[in-house]
Length: 328
View 1 (tube, rainbow, N blue to C red):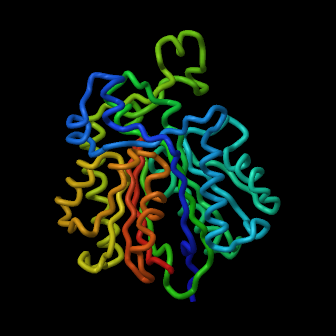
View 2 (cartoon, rainbow, N blue to C red):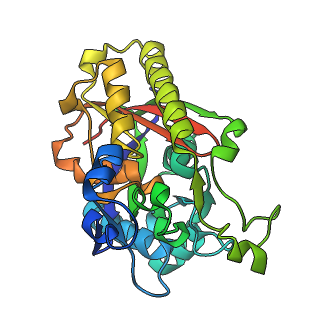
View 3 (tube, one colour):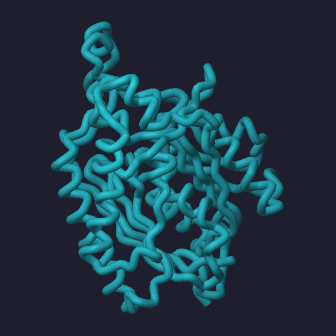
């Protein structure tokens, strides 16, 4: 019987500090009504503590996950961390987290694919399970977006927040877990959502700092159209490929980039409102953390054998859908 990777547990972490729309009204020229109508965001969380980066949140999520699943840290074989806001360029945030939790028997690395990173990391990890190479793998999605957001730029600062989520993958032979995936990337989207400086092509300098080139830049209208079209196509593709009756899918969990994107995609595919999960209103776009945070916050509503479609769209462009059957 085929071995599949199944999610055996989920946990998350969100910072305590709440940056509401009303607080943003005092910082930039905007209003609560304007933000809600265009993004669906009402508040977002910000990690305010000094000298604490993505590894702090990721570690919190992993510790909670290990406790919840009663997993011994020495039994973890692999840690993959999806992030675009690593603590450092190197070493990897995965290695920093593994050191903090004392995962002495694991190896690990980071994946950078913007908002699509968590699903890309989860599918990468699932291959180690399916080939019987490893038994217990932790996948983390975490970003401290507040570090790369210009709070004078209304097009970005109203959207993003900080947070982390982590899942435990194990082997399963009962047709639960990750059933199928379709993942895509197209570098033509590079110029529409990116960070201008800090890499090897445009390294940090006095000029790049002065010109605010270390913040997130995006072209909202182009991103909106590309995200809607890509998500509709890939969701329909994975449904058709797996011969699923759409009415039998229990939940569609889309990347929490913009509530209008989620609503538009849902309407075009005729997804019932009760089958979509929304967390962007309370947490904003936490980039790599949105999918695991959705699963974490709605964990009690998920039932064994629930059919779930996870879908993402991010910078690059990158996008994808994963079909899973919930395992507990």
